[in-house]
Length: 62
Image: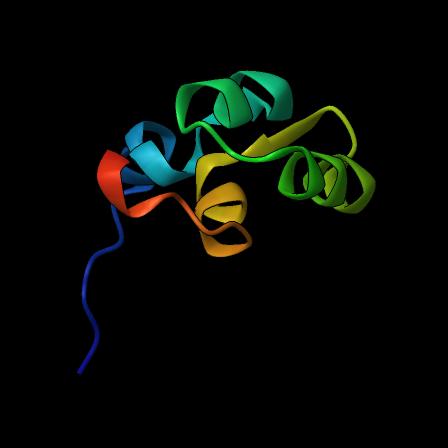
């Protein structure tokens, strides 16, 4: 069975939003090691999905 794919859905998908790694690290209070690791892995920019998947957000911020 096939379904209709709405192309405009992917444009508004929140996880595909591109963020500055530094802003993400500040917002979620990541430690310096995590910040460095994310910068090394992605450079200055990454999607929200990539950042969330590859970081450990402190428990008190969830």
